[in-house]
Amino acid sequence: MLKAIIVDDEPVARKVLREYIEDIDYLELAGMAENPLKADALMAEKRIDVLFLDINMPKLTGIEFLRAGGGPHRPLVIITTAYAEYALDGFELDVVDYLVKPISFERFLKACGKVRARYSDGPAGRGADGLAGRPGHMEAGRDQSADHFFVKCGDSLEKIVYRELLYVEAMMNYIVLHTTGRKHIAYLTLKGILTQLPASHFVQVHKSFVVNREMVSSIRGNMLQLGAATVPVSQHYYEAAMREILRDRIIKRN
Image (cartoon, rainbow, N blue to C red; front, side, top):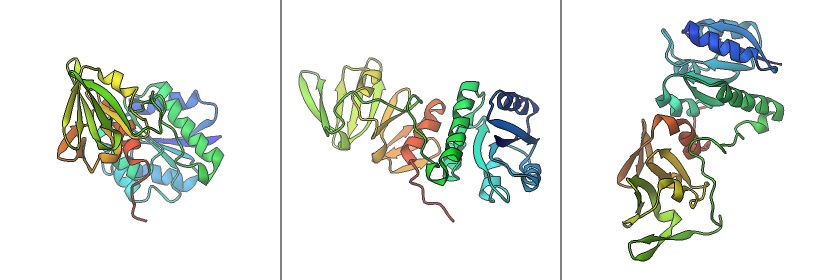
């Protein structure tokens, strides 16, 4: 049984999470707190395995609490917040998952499954969570060993090399493939091109944009820099997109 605490200043949010926890047989609610300072006291009294942590709280935010160390014996953390824009901060602080309110039970259960898997696998299993079936993940329909594909643009077939493709943009009933050298316009849908791009390199970040994660040079808020272009990340795709783009490549302060 994994012992959990909820830290959220909203009574309704605490109630929803409490009911979710009660419906999961391997979780036990060990306490609730309306701010991180009270949670700190709870964690000092007993061993806690998982912390469900809100971000926007008075006195001390969830992010500030984690940056300060997250308590004397920091448990695994699942962020529960109404603000998608803090996902990057959460991933930098090694949270297990980032849930944006309103949180469905299905999504909550999936996040809890990641916590359970980490404890089952031990230290070596931490961070080994997959993304199949989540927004931003794409199943490739082509040979994964190929380094290019051809696409019909007007009356010609143009060769597109994966490593040179910065991003794909949906425009009405066609798409624009932005490469390092030029733009190619094709009479295709974004959904159609997704099946042709390798999931190891391309991730959907917006209903109108798919980016080559290897070509992202910087991230500022919800904007990605790819070459001279900037591409927005929508709230719906933010969590999964950031996890795919970053993939545990952040160097953190010890």
